Image (cartoon, rainbow, N blue to C red):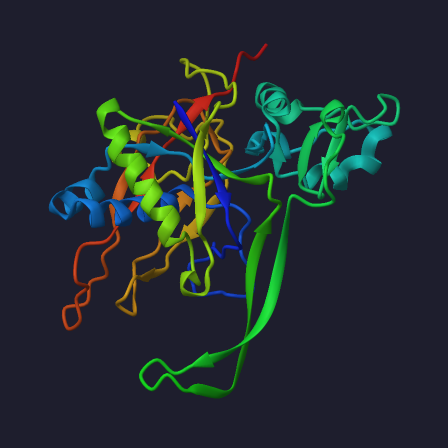
Length: 333
């Protein structure tokens, strides 16, 4: 497993809804967006195998998660959200409920305890867990020197422009949101390769993507980044027990056998969006979100989301990467 840390040179905008919703941007990047961007950059370097790579990528990636200096954060396991706090700690319920990101130490605790997780955010324990920016949690001994925010969201008014004439549209004012990270923070993702020899090509595509920009509004300087390899977080290995997703997952037919959803804990998200340079929308699909837990890891699949438009077909087939990137949930008593 390889870890790649992205340091953004400016802001970025990612539309998590895929509907051209500019007023808000997610502060992290989903695995299907990252995979598509990497494959698009790779196609410029080696166009001959572009369609084959898109339908069967030679890599698997997690979503991009926040980091600060040497502290990595992971998406909170869905199973831990159903809190069972004792009556004496009910005043902490709202604070704990809002937490979205955990350091690997806390993530392992939450993954193993599942719905019985009891975060050490208590007066008697002296706040052994510190909540940062309302949504990130880390052990209090690592909280010294934290800035007020790891990222900040900026919203600016803009005037819509008519595509054909390039003239402003009267009264068509909208707001555009961008995410700024602290200089010592950014996003990281995990990657695996069936053939380690493809890593060099993958990293060349990643470098090109950093120069092109990731996300929307690249012509205005958004999304540019540099990258370097880092140490991956210590995570439980996959076993015969429960597995937790670190990516979006669209299950393959062979995944949907028997009692595959028994005792599963998951959230769902609808993914859509525009086809680049075409003005066409790709077909929407549903996926399991990061942090979802299943009795066994799901293989997932790459889905053909090419719209069926006989009178105006897109220039090429469009795929969305829904393969699962899973780790173990740890040993449970």
